[in-house]
Image (cartoon, rainbow, N blue to C red):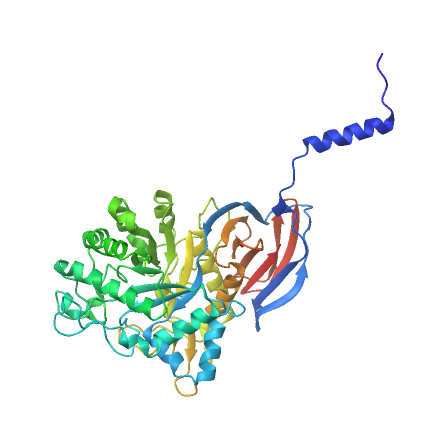
Length: 501
C-alpha cells in the first residue's frame, strides 16, 4: 500500500529534482568582488573611476557587448615599441636620473609595462649614421665582425629594460646586410647575392651570439625588414625575392640556428598585409614551416584581415604586428558581431601611412587616443599576439633620421629642452598592457554599438579584462556576462578598461 507524501516531503523532492536538472553555472559567470574601471577621456589619463558591480541581467539586452570567457583564442605576447638607434640616442641625451626614470616608466609592469621591444640589426633609416657590423672590403670569414656600435647606448638601455621587466621579449630585424654582400655594393637598397646566403646566415648568428654575450639574449629574429622593397636605394634596405627567402630560411638561417643550438625563433615577411599570398606559399614549403615560428606583419598596405586567412591555413604559426602606429589598423566600426577571430571593421583601414602624416598635435588629441584603441582592437581580433609600434622616441622633427621618411615618435624628446611628450597612442597602449599581461588569452566578445571597439582577455592569474574604445559621442554601454550585466558610461573619444576576478 503506497504512502501519500506530505507537503514538506513533496517540496523537498521537487527542490532536489530541480537541482539535479539545473545546469551548473560556470565559474567565469560567478565573478567575485567589484569591477575596477580605468578611463582615458578629456583631460583624464588612465584614471581610476568609480567601481562597478555585476548584477542580474534584466530587460532588453539588445546592443550589449556579450562576453564569453569559455571561448578563447590566441595567447598574447604583449605590447611594446622599437628601440631604434635613433630612439636609443634620444633617450641617451637625457641626464642619467631622467633617463633611468623614463626606462622604468616604459618597462616596469606597474607603469606602462611594455613586454616586447624590437631592435634593428645594424642601422635602419632611423639612425644617427649608416652602419653594419662588418662594413668595408669583402670579409667572408667575418674576421672584422663587431657589435661595438651598439655598446654605446642600445645595449645598456636593453639591460636596463630587462632589469625592470625580466621577461621582456626582444625581436631583432635586419634592414640590410653589409654592403659587400650585396649586388650593388652598398647598404642602400639592392639585394643580397645568393652566393652570400651562407655567410649572411653566419653574420646573423654572430649577432645573436654577441648580444647573448652582452647579457641581452634575442628571442626572435626576422629574415629581413620589409622583404618586398628596396626603398629605391634611399635608405638601408634589401629586396628579397620570395624564392630567396625560402632558400635562405630553410637551407641557411634555420639550420645555422639549429646547429648552434640558438633558441631564437624565426619570423618571416616583416612586411605588409597585402603580401599574404606570399606568406601562404612560403609556409606551404615544409622546410620553411619547420623553422618558422610565425609571421611579422606591417599595416602600411592591405587589410589586417589578411592575417585571418593565413591563420586559418596555419593555426600553429603566430601572427605578430611588428611595425606601425598603434592606430595603424583603425577603422570606424559598426556593431561588432564577429565570428571566431573575425575583425568586424566596416571597410578597409587607412593604414599607418595615413597616421604618420597626421599633424603632431592631432596625435595628442582625445580622438587620436580613441583611434589608437580601435586600431589595437582590430589587430588583436585578427590574431595578433603582439603589437610593436615604430620608434619609441624621436625629437620634435622626427629625427635622428637618415632615410626619406619623417614620422613622429611614440614619445617625443625636445632636442633643446629635453621635455618628454607622450602621444595619444602611449595612453591607449597603457590600457592594453594592463588588460593583457604576458600569457593572457583573448576571449570572445560580441555585439555592441556603432563606433565602439571591444576586445577581452583572461590573464594567467584569473583576472579578466575588457578594453572598450569609443570613437563617437558619449554613450552608456551594457556588458553581459552569462546571466549577469553591468553598465558603463563611455565618454566621447575615450578608452576604458574594466577588470574583475
